[in-house]
Image (cartoon, rainbow, N blue to C red; front, side, top):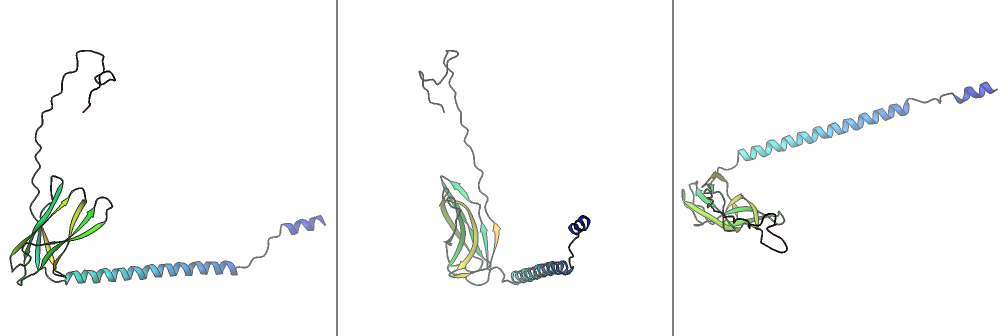
Length: 196
């Protein structure tokens, strides 16, 4: 009796292959769905990329050339400016340049419209734009558009005037000789002195 009881303890339970097969098929189905979704998203991205490139290639030819001068910093102010040249055969009216400015304190982008002087340009005529900003208020500026009234115009850009080299004025610093007493500190509670 003891022997028969021991044989029953070590008997493995019978298992069917059905749950294992079902789990394997579910895994394959999920993998196939993920792969198909990835392939669909990749194809959609490729189509949108091609269509966006096609629209930029077939966009209108530029009507103006914006020559951007390098920013000039003087006396706590930054001057941003340049020239806009009408390269089309038509008259452009109410022109303004749009700049995107990044504020220093919170890095928020701000768009500012700067009018041209003169605002109306005949064919091959030039107009200037110029704005002065406090250097402590803005960290960067970027050209984002050219407008004729409320309408955006296609444009091309070119490098303008370089910022002049900054000259450092030579300074002569004269350091006085220490007092004749050796071993004494220059700045002590008994003999306070201002340290530069």
